[in-house]
Image 1 (cartoon, rainbow, N blue to C red):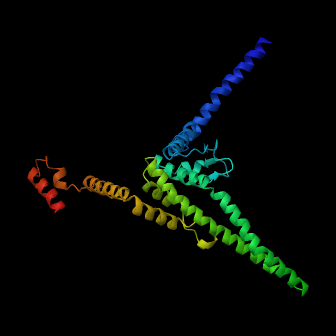
Image 2: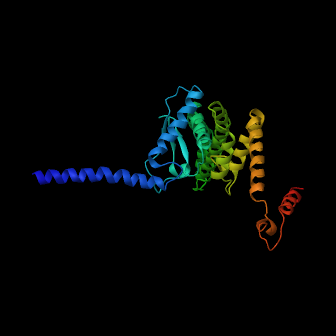
Length: 283
């Protein structure tokens, strides 16, 4: 009996040690933050946005436990449960807290402005207006011997396009309002442009039949918002880029063979020659 109990305790101890180590190993190669810190990081940034903007909605931030075959570069809001989920593949592409704040702010706007409910209501309205006349048309066609439901198929196609197109307005609105939430929480909205440029594409099909606007349209929409209301962030970015360019130019300054071998006695190169070369380079 004692041997059996000892063996059971041994199994439990091994399990408690191996599982955390495995999770830690998965997290190490996962991305910017370790696996145990993913949800903590998302919650920290999300709660800061909520507090700074005095949003009293009880929103929960969630990160799936692991990456699966269904995981995508995506984040989404569930309005009914007030839950925002950020998928791990997206977290791997996020480089700093400002970019994470951009993603979370966008999803927060969807919840507090009830975009999902409004879109569902609009979807029902569009179907109510378009589909009944199409069905009547097909019934009339059937009476003269044409059994193919042409009008119903066309109605569904048109309804889908109009519904998808209607959702684009909510996406653009969410982007603009998200900029306000970011600024009020102390984050730099320029990074909303950077993360969108990295994860969104224009695709190959018409903008009308998309649930989300093309990436270039969304970035332009955000940029216009920043230019009109928060130009100081653009000025700051220009200044930072200028300093970075100057730093890169300094580090990539070509060094002549003479400068490299200025201490070589057989060449007889003077230090003054190398200084003149650097002056001439800048001139």
